[in-house]
Image 1: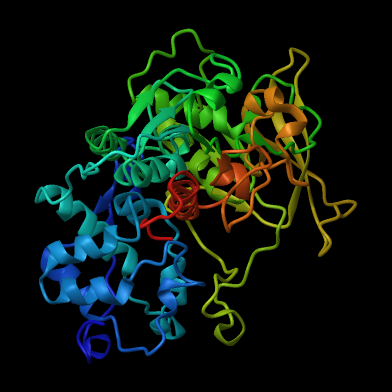
Image 2: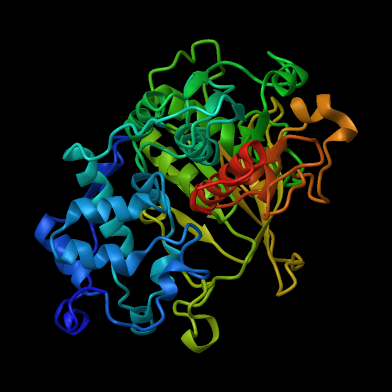
Length: 477
């Protein structure tokens, strides 16, 4: 906890944002960090609540010891706070920026809608730890002689690779893209998290002995069988990147597409990668309609504005949620309530209880609009409520169905068992798949989820692999 009476004396304060009119002119992060003094005051608000719901199971998938490091920050011992934070979370600078903070929803002070600014404090600790040079490679003092392949370098793969390397194993990470990070790099826009944070973590992992192999897609560039036989254990962390089919007529028109190619190309563009051989996806000077109400849809909104879209409308088939949740019904769990992302606040129009019936176009096959209709409580279109939204670009962002099936999954065939949702089947006790010495963690096992859940699964899978290879493990679960 922090100061005993801090929650009574100090108001909640969060990071400020650059004005929307300024931030849409660039792709950099636009938060304005609090001063060290202000962060310490926010940490002081952590009360003696008795049962800290903030660090699990409702609050934090990685079980961050939030009251402990709040107290350390309040006391001015930032270095020990950083050690404490990193004991449960390999990459707090990632989660401090892009996690939706279920810990704050679970905070006891959220019963009064004034939770501790946990996410702000977490980011401040991680950023100061790097600034002060406290984050350094921690190579193992001895090697086990065992080798592990980690397929995929998203948050699950990176977390697992770091834990396994620190346990003394020789770790090889195989990544399809030219750089590490997975959707952290190629899916999440830079205005939410700049990519130099990934680069410095990769440098740390390399200093701990992890070897990265880029431009290497398992099942295409290298056979899965070769990786399987070359290593003592293999961990699948390839994510869930197969988009959910919206089932909308007209998605074959020019100007209608899935969200991820649009976001990935822009991230490549910002990152300086060569995209000259790709068809440009660009919202500048266009009326954009985004189908979907989640985080990916919101990222499309913010990216479209920064590319110079004339207008952006976001379609959500769900009814508009209540402005405030019933605390007695939902707390400490994540509630459904009306939320406005920073991207939506930049000028998006939002249509609730609206179904997207079809994408319409001209005789040349170009998108001209989206046919919509209001829906009833069962999400069935109401006859007579149809309307047309003008559109030059339509982005479908309604989630993901599972992993890419045309790579190592296809090669492994029936030997690699999938669950009914086509994710790689593995439990959360040992993360073992149906293939001997093959494990799975993150979205490829769980399905589309949060970065913090991927880090949790990567850490837990690493412990299971360590036990499998050596018979025991000192890695935390």
